[in-house]
Image (cartoon, rainbow, N blue to C red):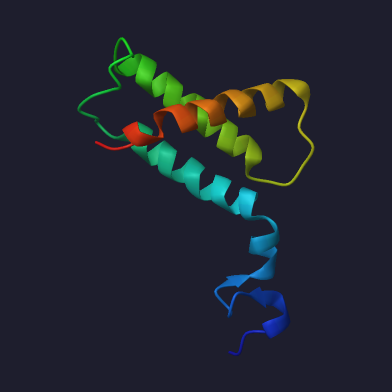
Length: 99
């Protein structure tokens, strides 16, 4: 089945709708991966965290932010606050997302 060239971008790598909504598409992927990472039996946590519970709570805040960002819609003040906090934590702890 041939792809409609008008609906794809960058030499047919992605549907144009996914490019227009790159933030939403990435949020979906990141939320899924963070959820899987949180479920792992991890062997450590960042040094500035007391324990694994605190680390998992931090990961959950990241997940919550990306879940709120998965779809194009208007968010309320509390949702925006959760998004801002989760994105800040994601940036701060990005290099710790491994086990």
